[in-house]
Image (cartoon, helix red, strand yellow):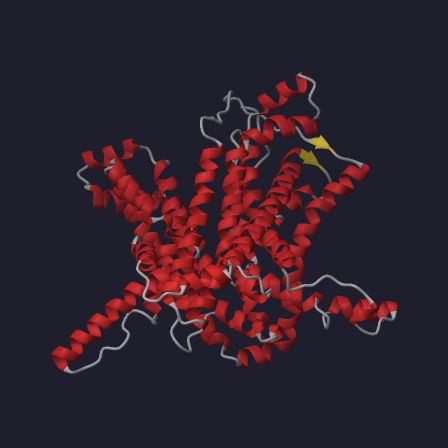
Length: 536
């Protein structure tokens, strides 16, 4: 798992051409400025929507609250590039919105009215905010649910109104979870390629593709990837520095039902609107448009080898999910058996790929696999006079390797958390009955972790289905997945024919969203598994 990152850094420090000075003089400043602007805009947007809606559905009572509890997670199932395609299709000059406006007001052409530019940096910020705010909502809502009611009651006795209690007590206590949610959203932002490419926004990820594919410079792409990697490291380091010396502990172990502030009139209307708009724009709109297109143009989609793309996608995602869960179990159980600092450090580093954009990992995979293939080919030619060709790079093996490097953190984190809930006393009991570590894992731990293993596999499976930049770079020639199929067709203004493929990706993403919704509702201490919260 360390090979891709080491390969990128090594290749960047030892370039095979002198393109860096050209990039520095022409596009580097633009890439930095655009990427920072995109990150700031998305970060502010996901914080505002995610935290605000989490507080509303957790602490307030208004009509439809129980629906928004889970509905606010639905945009997480929509890849940003899919929403970008739908938004552009509906809002561009020939789209439904502008056509209706021209018919209603009698406008003849674009000069008769003003309409914002759709393919722009602002649109990219809005689109990514709408699909990434659930990261913040998910963690913020879980943090609010876990807070003791005692500290909130104390703030009320000191004369604080609900807004002041939120600002001065609940929000600071939830800060670690909120910051992690924002960082996850920003990591997805810097990883995105489909949205920024479609909106013509020159970010670092766009630059990596441009330098590699259009300028034919792998070393230049590696140098840009190294700078983007610094962005990710700065994100993590800044968060840790910002909360240095601070502690976030609950001061009471007593939990009871959280106070619910009844909202009426305009306040209730405002709360409904605040929760409804993100769901409508982030999920209902794209799902509805895609469904209508899929029903109308399904024959064209089926003719375009849709089923072969589905088989390719399911094969890659399934194999990657099984391997990721297996490796995650291996790493987590190894740490449980021998939790030395060195072993913990190694396992943490092995799962760092989730914080690294897919384009960086793809470059780091192509370089060593290409070198290995060239070495093996030269050896085979010399010894047997036969060319082996590309055995690793440019094959599905490279894609699966990339998926594992990027999404291993999901399976490892889930398995580690599940193992932590199994008391070590069970390990000791198994050993007294004559079971070694291997048999204890098979007969004791794996059955107890069955639900978590399924969840880990499902999360990896769905993320593999949606992954675009890594798949675009590593896929073999004439090999398409649903993500690449949708991206290529939508880029050619053929969204209608790709709608069924996009809807398939969205539908697969809804499953983990439902599981996440159930888990956060049941996460509060003092709550009965299938009933309301009870005092404890």
